[in-house]
Image 1 (tube, rainbow, N blue to C red):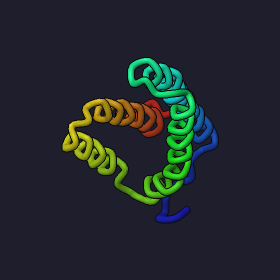
Image 2 (image 1 turned 60 degrees about the horizontal axis):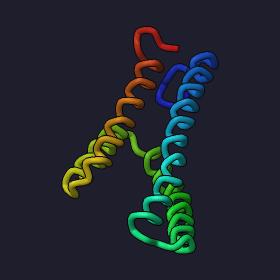
Image 3 (image 1 turned 45 degrees about the vertical axis):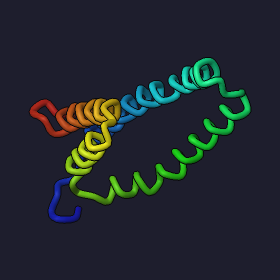
Length: 124
């Protein structure tokens, strides 16, 4: 192990992975559940046609896929993940994007719960 760290037991690793899988499952449900509502909103309120809605949602999905790899690499490479989350919240606050601040706060709370479960007094 690098830096003299003790190996993590398999039991702890599998429970932490299950917790992360659960977080990803529920986040995907939230993200994918909003797509149909966005399409209805664009169709009824903004009076877009179906073709434009399909193109824009496809571009958004592709942009998410393309951005996910470098963003994931940045998060994996940094040792200051909390600072990265705080920086994202500050950026959203300066741009007056309060909904994104709430999303970041929820992710921060979920990360704290996973960290507490991993490193807390009753670690799993």
